[in-house]
Image 1 (cartoon, rainbow, N blue to C red):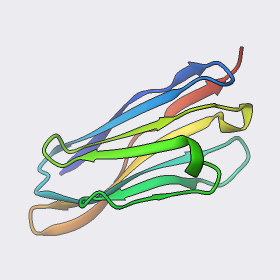
Image 2 (image 1 turned 90 degrees about the vertical axis):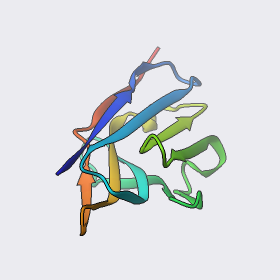
Image 3 (image 1 turned 180 degrees about the horizontal axis):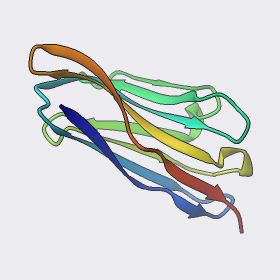
Amino acid sequence: QAHLVESGGGLVQPGGTLRLSCVASGSVTSINAMAWYRQRSGKQRELVASITRFGSANYAESARDRSTISIDIIKKSVDLQMTNLEPEDAAVYYCHADLWVGPNREAFWGQGTQVTVSS
């Protein structure tokens, strides 16, 4: 089995920078891809950014010009940095990972971390 542990988030001022980290632990054989999603109040969960083990990144339009996602295959971790935060960025941010656990390819979600944007 495997699980994801997220860190970062909390209170960020408008115009500030958000930094999130997620580490996969447990019986992880290898990583295919990792991603960050968010769920704003009353909205469906949506992709913020994703990245493959080869470093190929994909961003939601709302995040593209102010976000950077990075992956560390050795550490089994993914980081997200988002700048110039707006109140609309307030959400619960979730880490997602597409992993090999032994012979099985499985998807995992983190528990979520709350991000509040306020002065």
